[in-house]
Image (cartoon, rainbow over all chains, first blue to last red; front, side, top):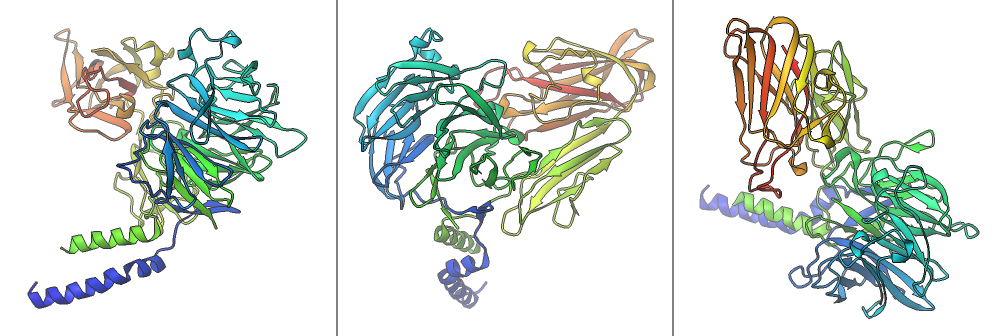
Length: 343
Length: 260
């Protein structure tokens, strides 16, 4: 190429460079994730946090507080909690003492937000204010008679009932759900491992389904069994919601829908094969974000699988007050959460 | 220079909408077993609007010009199936491969070293039952070994001319399952009343390999007739440095043997 050709080409390229975002945006349709009436566009650069200054390891769980902030829990002890505004700007961080930070649940207690953190390494559940002041610590549940030492207890999730009762899922320990009153006094335990539908394997998440106001129930994850199991509020088994192929994490209910991050699928274990699944009020799969078009055979969903490599190992979904989703991921190259906006 | 500009353009484009071009995930390739007598079939499951699946049966990398998948495909000879998903708004998936292996000479029985108790199988014909070829070490068809030497005696129904010996192994290095250091195959020579060398394969483990059923074929260097074969497999004693389990003993998983 001679100089003249070079200049000519450079100026064409410069023009191209200037126009590129507009042209390319028109040329390539944006990927819309999901199905039916639950479809989203995704922004993988939502977080505007400087990774050098505020690093993450696993981004485990997220919640939104009463003033609209998005709270992320990570097991990076430089900043266990990162608080964002909805646009992804950093508000503040706190927490250096939770090396196994895993479960994050928010409960509005008489007008004040409280957080419940499950720490896998400390074998404890810690109740804090939204700015990190410790209010209560729950140690391993000796009262159940099922545990000899703290190490056997590896809590992954909590949910708080309207009356203040605390339910803790021992998802990486013995798979029991342990129920306490609001002061932390043991009431009962249930689920656990065994032969029969009422038992679970890897009870990784728990939530309260109060969409039927007269019949609230607990939805408990049995992740290795690719299912949710429903129990009454006092721990009696009701039924199983099979989700073939899907390693479901924590169920999150918002409005009429249940949202859940699927860590990975049976079709491709240990291969970053996760997606996000949405069920309607009748526990029917209506949308898979990054997964297959939902299909049923009789009353059972057909095996589910990833179809688009959007997520690696999604671990939790948070739904904000404008119906946007935030997806936190485990073991996915220290990636910050993604935001998904409904279309 | 031109490459740099293209990269820069891609970067600007990427920044502008916060969304890259996503890659399709590999389709699900469903079959009951990779081993068969007579004929068998496979199905491809991949329900993603805007994407379609193409496949080849000759071992070539699939392109959009290759066969479009619509219904179950019948296989009646040894075949390498390769499957890939394409869609205009996505980058193509990785290729999914499956080997379909047809029966060879009639095997009377196979005796083998005791596997690790967690990956054992009560069936005595587990290595010639035409069940397996599934890339999942928990599928129940694999024998798993974590010792230094695996010894396998193969008895054919009758004395036959041996063209090749096929061994189906699993490669799944994320699960610490490696190809072995070496496979040695012997045949029993009636005149010399001894096992003589038929052939061997030596493996290196310099870098990570794909997760797949690895079909190894040992072909004798000369014309051989035999009724009895001896296979010695030496699992990887020391996982290499590039792997998270470096220094530990590797696992060997085997699920089928064929003789042609």
